[in-house]
Image (cartoon, helix red, strand yellow):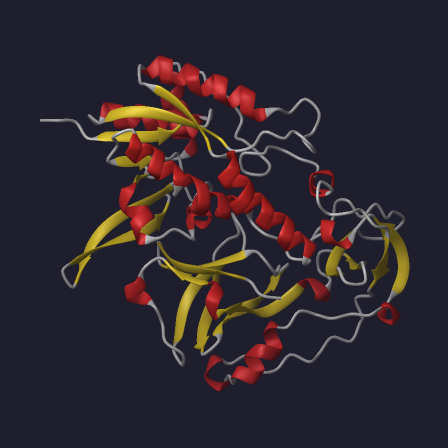
Length: 399
């Protein structure tokens, strides 16, 4: 019987290395592909040049496992689809998630095409998540499930995938925990067994974000206005889900808006578009009883509004809005029509514990109404909603 051929995206990390090993052990014909997605080292922290090291380690893994090793350059696609989008979003005062975009636009698109060109039927990654296939009205439907290791679950990063993409992918380590993966790597003496997990922007590395963004976004000094905790925030309307109107939901989802007279001048910054809501590092303002956190950014007037302490009321909101054009369903059969209310669990950032909420579907999008106020709801980030262990859909948080 002919073996099924699968391409593994070898990144130079332990997860993809063990994924390749497990697939070979299961009887697949395995090849390794290393992706080059970025060449410019501007903004990389000193001594951190991940691409060269990663490629060398990935090739060593392929040699160790006795599988063919290929290199493919997707830097043009990555620049156009991910990095240009990043710059555009930061310029607007929004905070994109390049890892989610990288998966949707690179790892699960041109990479799949490269795997097919090499004669592969499937491709695999080292993500901590799972999938299964069910039949719905005689058609196969792919379900994206959380990883067994709740501490490492990476389903959030895949929240923008399509049925066509999921159909071709395998997640060999989704049923394992990180310690189990490292143990396997050590047992078969893989060079990645003790290698630290990668950090920073997907395929770029650990960067000084302001320096990285300065490639296209000009540095312009602005002011930091401190907002007192006693600032008079709008009264929150009743949030009983049975008494909601769209007007109430809209009110709850609105970000707090400040002006210079609402607080006091407390410092200066190199550019409002370099900062994001909830950020602490980089404000460089000392002498406060509690650390300052970014409450809001005004990129038009180049002003940052900040407040003392993680419990500052300006950091918390009860709801968010996602425009209709930004809603993505992993399963078309679960799409909701306007007027529908569903109970889901939601996360608005990686590794955030799932939060109870109701999602209210309206003509121009949806409102997510949380049971408890959420810290640091950030425009441009992705909200992903789950039904039990299944990731159902996602969308980009509006202003």
